[in-house]
Image (cartoon, rainbow over all chains, first blue to last red; front, side, top):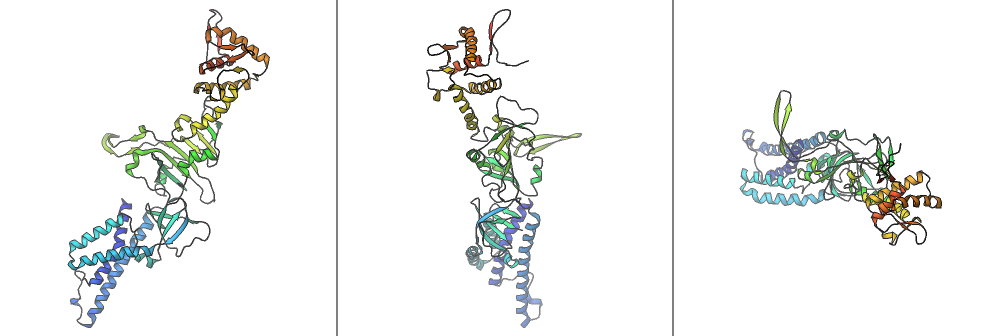
Length: 189
Length: 295
């Protein structure tokens, strides 16, 4: 149950940044926070930017908390893995997110709470199918990198690790301290 | 590295427990310490905590063990088991490997799961002190940690009963038969026997095969030499006495030899060699005994 909850919120965290950019792009106001009670004219703009900054920190914090929970509460797999091929994979996620962004934009002209909920549900459903391997660009700010890795047993999986620019210099490279997020996505502590 | 897996019907392996949190669930399922083991012989009973042992060559290791330990010992090589797979489980096994040493071998203990061990979802009346409750039993497999076979990582497989592990290891039958094939040919080609059939394709029944290996061991241990004329004459005299009642055919055309043309003839020849035929003292009845118990 705990594992299910962590995975669920991880996939939400994967998509909150899309919503953040959506809000900024369309200059959507957060309810209950408006500039009307601040001084008029010059400082209004500053307040809007401050609001966006706060939203940014909120989404960043949300993304970071769930990585912390994964590291703390999900168990480490016993044993090691020997890998033979490795490739950074952040680049291949961007087209997916841009596509999602464009779809979201086309809906956002008539942005009702129902539309947002529907989009959210679709995103989460997509994430649960493991198509984007819980990719979250905010994690790059915490030095997490995403690699597509081929193991010695022949299967390919996604590795999330804080080691940067891994290249296999000897014949094989050993991974240990892996945490399983799903059958094809693993986080290295 | 410790990993507890299930072997499914379609030769897939899935992980059940593989991390520091859930592996303690099977802490009672450990590699056994083998104090005494004997080379496998179906006619020798095991005593106490002894194990049967067979030594596998490279090909046999590949055929028998690779379905379980090839590429399963790595951290990400198998997926987690799903509740849907529970009734496809054929065996449960535990792998152990020392990650600190490179090229270390993988050890394995394995337990067969028969259909009787698979529990369907059902209601169970659960008894406590002074009360009872109904519990909804989910899909389950009974598992008490009994080990059917143990592979030491090198070339030896230990087990307590061959029939129990026949369905786990595909080639163990052939391994068992090959050992007796050599013995069978050695026996059939012995100069003391004659036959009109082709010895290389002569079909010997399973029970006769076992008796052949036993007889050859017994004769060797008693220093009985089938090639000496004296011994052969003794056997022929003995066989002559019971020839009529037990249909033992003695061929007198070339030299005096025991003849076999069918599997049943072999049965009688083995009775002669084991000296199973006897005459009772008082009523002079001719009988056969297969107990072979000595004083």
